[in-house]
Amino acid sequence: MSVDSFKKLISDEKIVCPKCDQPVRKFDKYVETIASVWDGAGDSVTEDAGAKVTLICANGSCKWEERTEYWENYLVD
Ligand SMILES: [Zn+2]
Figure 1 (cartoon, rainbow, N blue to C red):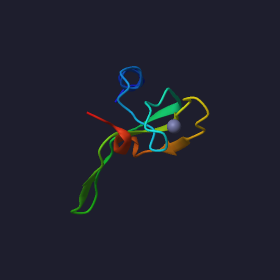
Figure 2 (figure 1 turned 90 degrees about the horizontal axis):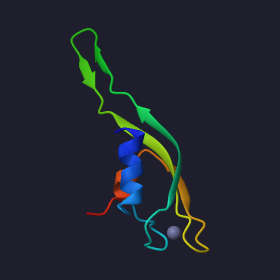
Figure 3 (figure 1 turned 30 degrees about the horizontal axis):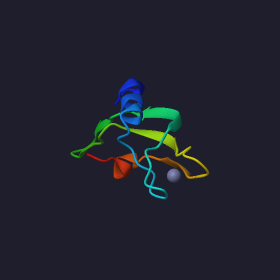
């Protein structure tokens, strides 16, 4: 996922803080993790591309932030 797509998730309030249940307002240090395919001796391993990001709640007095590859856990429909 590109940083612009991620930015849109934030502005569409699709990522929710687990502490105060408000949409996460900010993020920092977005890094795409690249898909890698290794086909060595008989084995091949495919990893899905993902992204690592620091989520920052920034609602009122909530200080929640987390650096995670598993931000999809905080996605809402
Ligand atoms: Zn919060």
